[in-house]
Length: 161
Figure 1 (cartoon, rainbow, N blue to C red):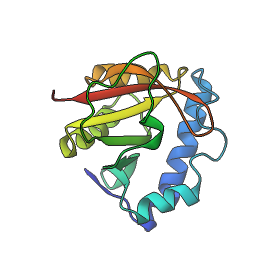
Figure 2 (tube, rainbow, N blue to C red; figure 1 turned 180 degrees about the vertical axis):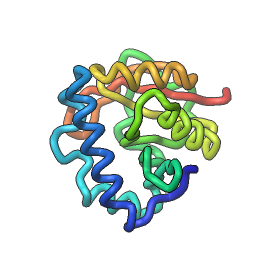
Figure 3 (cartoon, one colour; figure 1 turned 60 degrees about the vertical axis):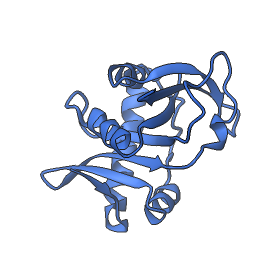
Figure 4 (spheres, rainbow, N blue to C red; figure 1 turned 135 degrees about the horizontal axis):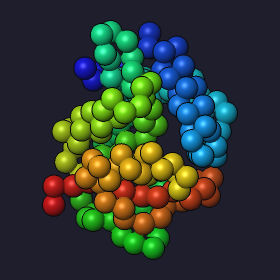
């Protein structure tokens, strides 16, 4: 079951992100999410703005992500490629799951796509599990974007067009 997160969910979401950081470090991706990212203040802001979602299994939070129905400023310029279209789009950020290989991340992405049929997402070059997931879920690699910090990310898009 996927639903909007509430402030009561904050400790469980923060723990899920801690586990995700450890998983990334153990799987060759130590640089995407530095220690304490995403922090509780960012998670809380996403919750209060109605952009944080959780996936529950038997009442336990097993996945979390942020979903926005507005343009992402870092997606305004794409390099070494192009977006599949310029139509309004949704964005998924900060996707993390407690158990890998059970389809939880795919279910989160499917939920977001059911809410907006033109979806964009980005990931770190070293995040091979996420790249495989995105391709499996029908996302297409579109090019390179740069975060406000200047960090490079691989940009993907899934659309019905």
